[in-house]
Length: 281
Image 1 (tube, rainbow, N blue to C red):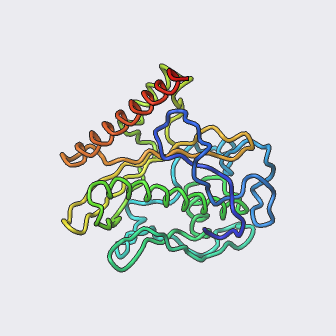
Image 2: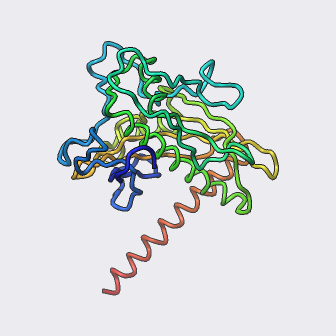
């Protein structure tokens, strides 16, 4: 998906930031395992995975976040999308594509959300004062779009449990970089206590997505924490998304309790099954 023609090998996990085996994780559409003429950022399969923006060399130290503003005056009130220019920025080395990819995420019954073009993404980076290597922007857009598609798939899993016949809509969303959710704070504390088992790094971004259930008109807020996990041996980056309904309504609390109960019960049955096999051998 996106501008590049080649397929990547970056991986992701939709689970909490516990250090799990990611061998079965979904594939990101960005090529990281070999050099490609369509992906200048993929320099070597043995290089460690990292963000192509050099944050250390910048005099400003902004919090880690999505570079696309999702709130305030940057939102077009007509379509609730960022109002980003398609014109090249000053001192830009070469032109970037201005095509915008349509997502799979429905905004209403007739339209779907559109992702920013590489040129708009670049302009957002420049406006925030980040180091902006043009040759990496198209890859960054692909990763941005991929993670949002995976976040929506996780939301659909929650929503289908609530009402399998319903097709939810994403009505609006907000980036909240630097704002740790209560659950993210808990995992950080767990990582401080048990660094060998839990992630010790905070999420690199947070979004709040407002999902509408058309059958009832109810709106449900989802919290999404985006984590970077340790890279694969070949250098492929791994991402972990923690997606769940916010604990701000009785219905969402019931959903979370039900999901937690299912997880505990599944783990209990799996452990008992392994113990039975071990005892009979």
